[in-house]
Image 1 (cartoon, rainbow, N blue to C red):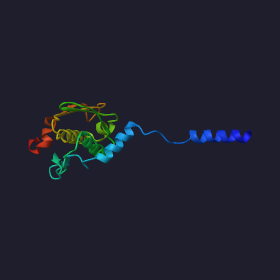
Image 2: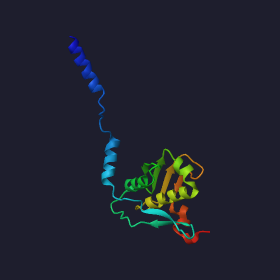
Image 3: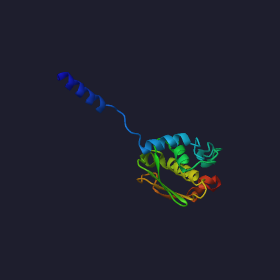
Image 4: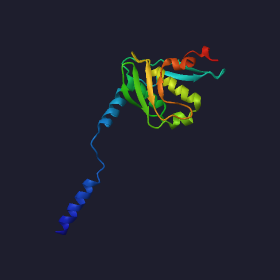
Length: 164
C-alpha cells in the first residue's frame, strides 16, 4: 500500500511541476509577427550632420510594399528596445499607440533624442497610405509628452533649411 501511495504522490508531483502551458493568442501573434516581418528597419531615421550638428530626417531605401502598421511598429521596437510600442487602434487616418514604460523616452534620451524618436515614429507610420497622424499615449516626462503627432510637428527635421 505504501508503494502505491509513493507512486501516486510522485506522479502528482511530476505532473504538477511540469513547466508546459497552452500557447496563448499573444504567443501566436508574436510568432506570426516575427515570421511576417516585411521590413528590417524603420522607413525614416534621424541623422546628425557632423559639421552643423543639425538633426535631419532621412528616408531609408526600405521597400514598404506589403508592409503594414505592425511591421513598422516592429522595426521601431527592434531599433529602440527600451521603448516598447503597442498598437491600440487603427483609425481611419490616425494610429493610436501606447508606451507602458516611457522612462527611456521621457527621461534618458534628452530633448533631441525624444524628438528624433517621435519624428522617426511619426514619419514612418504616416508613410503608410491613408495615415495622417499618430496618437501616442504614455506618462509625460521632462523630454517628451503624449499627444497626436503629424509630419507638420517635425518640419525643421524634414527640411533642415528651416532650422533657425
